[in-house]
Image 1 (cartoon, helix red, strand yellow):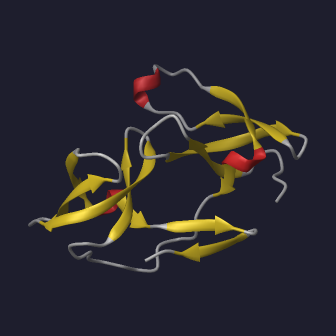
Image 2 (cartoon, one colour):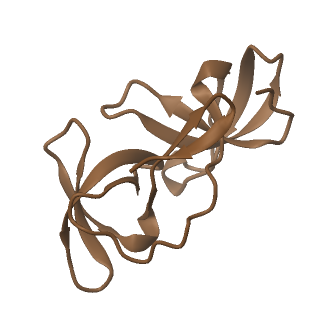
Amino acid sequence: MRFKRGSKVEVMNKKEVPISWRSAEILNGNGHTYYVRYEYHPVMNNRSMMERVSRKFVRPCPLPSQGIETWKVGDTVEVFEDFSWKIATILTVMQGDYYTVRLLGSSKESNVHKLNIREQWLWLDDKWILMG
C-alpha cells in the first residue's frame, strides 16, 4: 500500500520488546521509504520527531473499536503505554474501568484504564484482520 503526504499511520518500533506501534503522519515518500513525523507528546518538549522508515514498518491506523466495553481475563489486547501501542494480556479486571495487564514478552504489569485499551488488529495483504 502506498501512502500519500498527510496520511495518518502507525510505525512499528522493533527496538522495544514487545514491538510497538506509534502514531505518525507521512511527510513524503517514494513508496519504498517514508519520512514520518510522530505525533506530539508533552515529554518531547514541543519538538517534532521525524524519521525515515521502510514501508514494511508502516501501516494505516487501525479500524475503530468494535464496541467492546469490557475485557475479560486472558484477552489479548493492545495497550497505550509510553506513547505507543503494545500487545498485552488482561490479567485482572478491577473496579472503575481499570485492568491489570502484562506486556507480551515481559514480566511488567500495569494498571490501565479501558480508554487506553484497544483490540489487536493485524495488517496483512493490505487488509485488517481482527486477532483474538
